Amino acid sequence: MSDLRCLPPDTGGKHTAHVLGETDTPYGFYIYLPGGYEEGSGRYPVLVFLHGAGECGNSAEDAEALELVLIHGPPHLIHSAKWAPTYPMLVVSPQTRDEYWQTGKIDDFIHCVVKNYRANGSRVYLTGLSMGADGVFTYLSETGDRSLVAAAVAICGEGSAAEARKARTPIWIFHGEQDDVVPLQTAVAMRAGFTNAPEARLTVYPDVDHGSWYQTYDLSGIGHGSEQYDPYDIGIYDWMLTYSLSD
Image 1: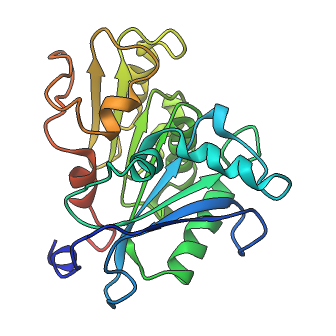
Image 2: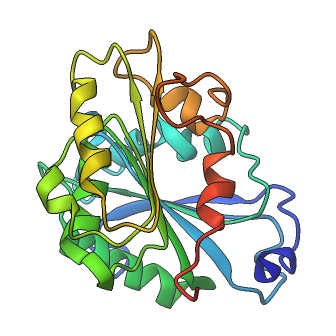
């Protein structure tokens, strides 16, 4: 973790929109550069956030559509001035216009971010909610041991438990016990599917429906998970940072 301690503290950074076609990435996206980024020379961890189905859009045709990615998750916390992880990191929030997240495009997007920003390629982390969590599951399964991601967090998503056996990336799954969109049993099966990952956790919130991302991303859910599953006992951002591809 010494490479993280040498980064300057985040005193408040810039959150910038890049519409589809403005850069060489396959997505339009928001990127957060922490305070101190422009003055320093260190390489930063990267958090890639995949949004849900309700936030899809084509910013090449409508620039304002890109603002949909600010509705939930880390980009929402940044936009609301509530973003305060232990260590500074780049936060990139792509927007897809497709019906689902495609592994090849996610790979290309990560490559572009690492090439164009001072990103630590060994510390790329992936998270998503609902359809975005589906994308996380698919990405880890399809990339296997060539994954560009060091650790991942998937919230209230669904995927193929059989395909998950191909994954080699640590993953933490979060789900609401009362989720009426994606049944809890789906998350239980996915957790069992990641048998070849270095670590696979499942945290379940009692009396919570499909919106289990709120307390996960803002960390207010710490200590409130069901005792039948893995506890939410460390902030997800700190947990992801315990892993690095260089390890």
